[in-house]
Length: 201
Image 1 (cartoon, rainbow, N blue to C red):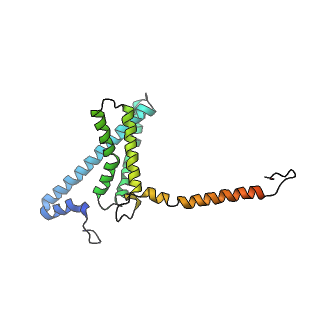
Image 2: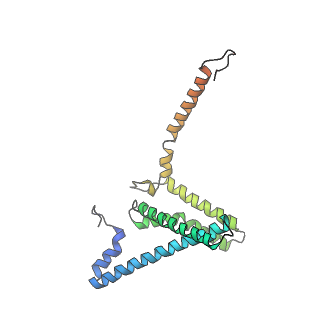
Image 3: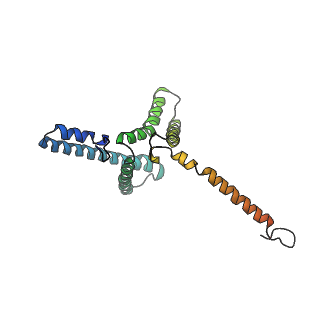
């Protein structure tokens, strides 16, 4: 249970372990749970720096460099991936449970990727460039849908509606810009004039 008395679904597995396992087996289960978490994180970090270093950086930015250069880039990518995961962990605290965040990530990544693979497997006219831009279009569509939809009871923009929040001050900003432009033009036409009847500035 959370501090406010509502069920904390993120603690469902630890609650089952505490309820059903004896003390000795409980310690072994906690160790196995931490080991699986660490191995998963290590695999994700390794995959991140490998994809960035060899598939993107080496192929498109700096091809033909020595191994020491790519090793430095891989280490920097590892550090960046860890920092990005820390930021994502803090963002996950804005959601009710981890599954809500995973569903959001799946909507941004898995759905466009699944459509791209499906077209690539069953449509002979699909090309690499078409798959890339289709993937970008799918991710952009997911971002727009997330930006204009607000879940019930949402109290943070992490859950959606950030585009609507950005559009709210647009009328006020447009009115202010129009007023500033009109005032500047009026001041220019009604200001002091030179000897030839033209504005002095």
